[in-house]
Amino acid sequence: MAYKIVASQCTQCGACEFECPNGAISMKGEGYVIDAAACTECEGHFDAAQCDAVCPMPGTCVKV
Amino acid sequence: MTQMPRIPMQAPAAVAASAKVTPLPPAAERPRRVPHNKRREADAPGVWERIKDHPCYSEEAHHYFARMHVAVAPGCNIQCNYCNRKYDCSNESRPGVVSNRLTPEGAVEKVRDVAARMPQLSVVGVAGPGDGLFQADRTLRTFELLRREMPDLTLCLSTNGLALPDHIDALKALDIGHVTITINYLDPEIGAEIHPWVFHNHRRWRGVEAARILHERQMEGLERATAAGVLVKVNSVLIPGINDDHMAEVNRAVRARGAFLHNVMPLISDPAHGTVFGLDGRRGPTPAELHVVRESLSNDARLMKHCRQCRADAVGMLGEDQCQTVHAGGGCGSAKDDPDAASEAREAWRAVVADSRAAQQTDAERADALVRAVAPAGDDRLVAVCTRGGGRVNLHFGKATEFHVYAVGADGIRFAGIRRADNYCLGGYGESERLDTILSVLEDVSAMVCVKVGAGPRRRLEAAGIACHEDTRLETIETTLADWYAAAVPGSGAARAEAGPA
Image 1 (cartoon, chains in turn orange, blue):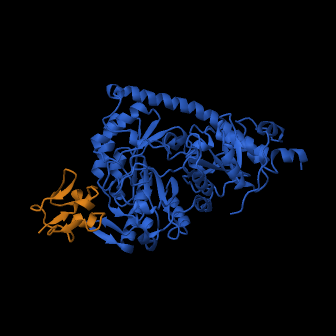
Image 2 (cartoon, chains in turn red, brown):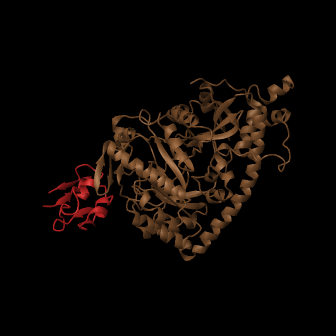
Image 3 (cartoon, rainbow over the protein chains, first blue to last red):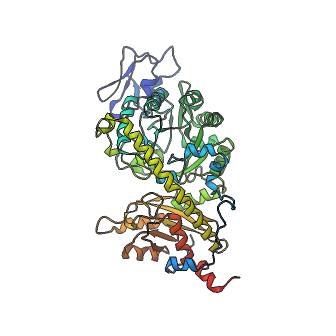
């Protein structure tokens, strides 16, 4: 399982890219995307998925 | 709001001359009068050197010097109910809004470009649109590059304070001497109504707990920054019904911790901006309410009153914004060929300003003494001035997009704030609705001073109890105000002179 970013709501602030412990988030074209293969949902790193915890837009970094 | 009496207009110069004004003793013999908002500068001479070119830290400097913000910090570690960074509209001026996000290298390119055409440029700041210290590497890298390339520019940072304690040493190492912290509350119960969550130690905190963490980090950051010799400005958003009664406490707390300036600024709240407060219909304070709160903080509160709440990518003098005309890489070329030319132009401008300032200081002291001498006891009235910069009355009423408000009376002449409203004149005709707005922002003001004002707006201003005074001499604001005051205010100047000495 992994997280994904709802592109239409993303403000491209980059906070998730900065916080992701796996380096799974990067800018692709117009917006940020999560590499599902690299995403661990932060298990083993933190209690909560960092991208969702820091994202300013509710419901934008969500579980696939 | 009580309305001021209508003020009869008379020839200012002649009457001022007839007023019984005690001549000033020679400069060397009189104690140097220091305006209440400049005492810190007088306390420590070194401090004046650090703020004299900074348009935000010195009200006087903002007539001469320009700043630019580079938007290298898009991400944020807290959420504020007055902020929505999703939408950018080029016609909006408010913090948190930005048109283009920059890399540190792109930011340096943009600064180089602006510096080439703007010798008034003295300060480059990072003010978001998120938090300057959340992704601190980007901000610090930008400062490092700028420090190396343009060492004469002052670098400046704005932050919510959550990450500030972690970066004091890095800021000190780069010689960042000006930091602004946004502090809206002390009581976490109040803070929870303003900031719904913060992101700290890899998790999201909510409510009162979040507000407590933010508060503790802000206070620690403020104390450590001032201890490190940084001049800290505190910004507080005045939110009626939430923290307006709390502001005096905030002011006392930040002053006790060494804050250099406190900027109490009005909530900007428009449903179109999509902020929580905007959508909830929470209104911002009126200019008159803001004035009352600022006045209620003590006379020596070190308030900044000339803030224009500019964008995170603002460019130019305060009050104007050229961010839409400046694009990285689109420069005119000359500066890139010769960066020394831009630096020399800045140096030349500083010399021009130094001359002009000395003359204005003398004018201001003379004007202040004149007003104190002729003012009836207890008189204190607000006067709106139209200026396009340089500290002079040099703008027509119809062209003014903001009014510089001065308190004039028994305490002399004191700057009291900026009030914005769209310009009335649209080139050959005026717009009545804009005049409605102007009248509402000037509701507690008793007079308006400008170069010229048309017959139509003059009638409406005077009907609203606002006397209109035209002065085409392009004199300094203080001189114009003093001449007008001595001539026109009942009980002052001419009136008293005729009655003879009491």
